[in-house]
Structures are given as structure tokens and as C-alpha cells.
Length: 319
Ligand SMILES: [Zn+2]
Image 1: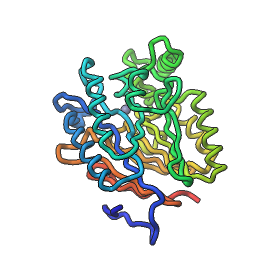
Image 2: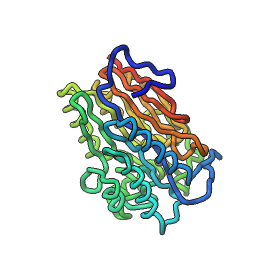
Image 3: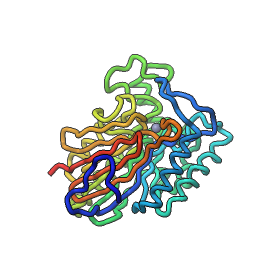
């Protein structure tokens, strides 16, 4: 693959693996608008970003593609949700390889889990969307379900809906649970458009990381919601990012955590040397510009080669 944007290939090394990345396409067949903070959103153009991404990936031939979620915007008229989700899945399917999808809040505003997960061919179980895969012996990818404990996506009387409503009731006194008004610092994350990882999923994560450690694998953890306050707006974090990171920090196999949701993007290295990279949204690309990339994985680092809004990043693993 090419080496652009000032990133250098580690001397004489070929990557073990390459994969494509994109986040927050948030397509809708509606006029352009802006976020709560006034950042422009280009709802129709985002499909063009995805189309250019797929074209590039088909030339570069990465082994697979990771989509970090939110493929259709919550403003998509409800009677068009199914059509819009299918349209975007069809665009992803033009990639000549496997696409692994994550679910985001905007996906769940449009379709309940029972309809969404089969459309995205998510290999979870019992309506959950967490899974792992090992494309080559040296690497394992762990995909977390950020809306496991959530007030959106599950049936209204589902135990996980009730648990989520209880969290919001306790942590957010606003009548609009999507409002961070009056919430300070890390407490700003307790918003309805975020969610949490449940106990079963945490135990599963622990088990997967044990296995990966035995196999001497590098692990990349992927989650729609960011997992480190240093890489994200505090209002975009996973509710129990701290519990998830406590599990991750028990092992040295996790090298990088990647996410979406916080459209401006971000990056950090946490106190245990784990890299965090939140990807810039496709939705916020002014017409004619892009935000997608591919990542080359080596034994000691990841190199992200981004286009336009997506910043290229070198992530050298701790020893
Ligand atoms: Zn989101």
C-alpha cells in the first residue's frame, strides 16, 4: 500500500495486515443541517464519501473493512429508515471483501436491534452485537456493543432498557436525558444517546483477552463510543468506559482502542500506554472532501493513512 501524508513504513517491513476504516456516515435524504454546536452536517454528501472510500479500498485491497457505526442519521424520516439502511449497506457491499459493522445510536433511532443486526450481518447472539475475530494469527479484533445497556434499541420492557433508564435517572437530573445541562466533567457522559457495556459482555471481554494473551496476539478493541477521556469529548464517552478499561488494563495484549461517535475525532495514549483513536466522521466532510482510511498493522505498530479530515496517525505499541 502507499505511504502518504508523511508516514513512513518501518524500515524494510511489509505490513502483516491492512484494513479499511470509516465512521459516522449518518446518511439521510434530507437537506444539509448542523449539529447542536453548529457544526455543518452534509447528510446526502456522506454517501459520496462512502462511495469514494469503497472505490479506494477496492483498489488497495485491504483484508477487511471496519465501519464504526451510525450509518443512517436519526433525522431520516421513519418511514424511510429501512430503505436508507439498506441503501448504505448496499454501498458497503460493493467492497470486494468482508465489512464488519458496529451499531451506533443513530442506527438504533432508525431500526430496533431485531431488524438492524441481521441487515448488518452482525455475528452476535441473543440480540447482542459484540464479537471477536482473528484475521491472522498475530492479531485479534474485539468489537464491543456500546448500546448493550441502553434506553434505545431494545424493547421498552427489556431488562437492559430498564437498567439504562435507572442509570439515567440516577445520573442525569434533566427532564431531557440527552441534555448535559448542569452535568460537570466526566458526569457529562450520562446521556441517553450514549450507553454502557453489561456484566456478561465484560466477562466475555475478560475471557477473550485471556485467550489472546495465551496466543501472544495483539488486540485492537473497537467500539462506537470512545473509551478514553483524553481522546474524546466527555459527553461522548461510554457510560462505564472505566470498567471496560479496568478489564483491558489487566492485560498487555490490547494495543489500540478505536471508536467513532465524537465527530471531530481525537487521539491519546492512556496511563497504561494503550493508544486511543476516535475517527473523524464522514458526515461532516464538506462536499468534495473525505474522511476514511486504511490501517497497516505491523508487529509493533499501527499506521493509519487517512484522507482529508481523517488524520494519519502512527501508533507504536508499548513494550
Ligand atoms: Zn453515535
